[in-house]
Image 1 (cartoon, rainbow, N blue to C red):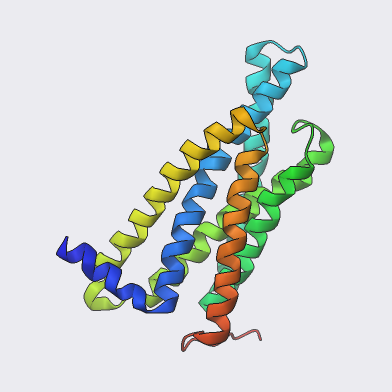
Image 2: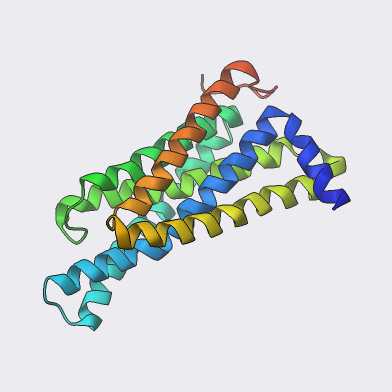
Length: 211
């Protein structure tokens, strides 16, 4: 508990507090995409008369498209994050995540070709939020308390996973299949606004090399 309190106290640094918030959201992004993208594609395919096995294949394809786009995007994202202010980088990352997750509100058929660009953006946004938060905490965590700070950072992520999965499941059943994605899209948008505020008020010492 002493170490945990030590990590919480470091949240007085607005950039560390921002990293904690982004961990909460980005881990929620991860579980929503991994759990509900496949389920969405599967349930829609079953509603169109496909057999469960074929429907599962359709649903998995949706997830694979998102993950493949994320893998292709990682080298470009790493190049960018290494050369810019880490808070600026997180602003861009959260903007991509917000756009990707909120973009699902325009999807009626997740297996249609018209949905592919949104799922590509979804995969890019998800991995961007994940790596943007990790690079920020990696820079800001003080050496003397690095373990405590990273521990709190990961705890925030675990809480985000629990909340996103529990609330997301209820929304999927009661509101619609895109509801969990829209929920975390709103969360991403809130962290995006916080990141913009931190970038203006407390950007840190690192300056962008490409500005």
